[in-house]
Length: 257
Image (cartoon, rainbow, N blue to C red):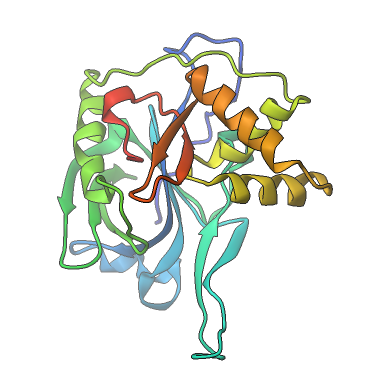
């Protein structure tokens, strides 16, 4: 008997925030392993019960997605290391409606969760979750493989998950986005995965999606306009280079910072 999969989600844009399922956070390049004493589930997840994918948190569920996998190079071969290469493996999740009801994906209703524990770890932050499925207790550990200059990591998801379960987590209803056929609308589509990106990355993803080149200055202007509307958040690094990310409905509890 495997993980419980909730098939009740029907996406809609005509519902109030209380009625809609909303994506709150997303962490790419996460490794899931069976936790606790739940060794009987290892067979479902292949070798040693380990699986790599993207962890998504909504106001209703915790979803581990392994389908639609992509790979992004982080380090390219160079003169000093011609064979060197490091890549980020992740599952592309731009919208909840794009997550298929595939046996490889895991859906955990927040109401079924009995325990969450965050581990900072020496290198990789971890989130351990225990929930009820099919009349028994199931546990899994989600390990964050890619860490950087962010302040919050997977271990910080615990507080938000617990408040969501208790119904005390504040969730903001964000401003209405631009029309999808405008440049600003296309840029918002690039940020649907809730990842932080610079203007060059945004322009590259637009080129890949629409098979045409976009003027960098126009893309910059669109990003700045969306930030002024409260749809994107602009953050600059120590050198003054700006990076953007989609504004989270979690407000001050944003897990992407």
